[in-house]
Image (cartoon, rainbow, N blue to C red):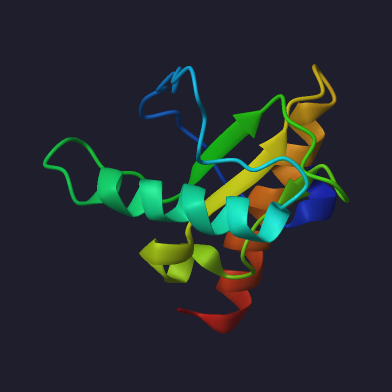
Length: 114
């Protein structure tokens, strides 16, 4: 924990899934908005299973989604239908991008007390 954050958050990876379809229809090159909608729909299906559930999901893609390297719904953790972030895989830099997007979904939600 960094003292400047004034937060004691622990992130735990519940599971990792490799989505390896030959023809990826989830992420559309150059269409971040639709891609984010698609991965959130996929995430909703995962949440409805009887397996261990998760609060948020992170989707990494090698495709150019145009614009910023990550997208996430603000306060997404409050709404399971909007609790997935879409991030372009940029190697080790992706860790910072993922942290930023998770903050959008979690920390802003804490202010709103969902």
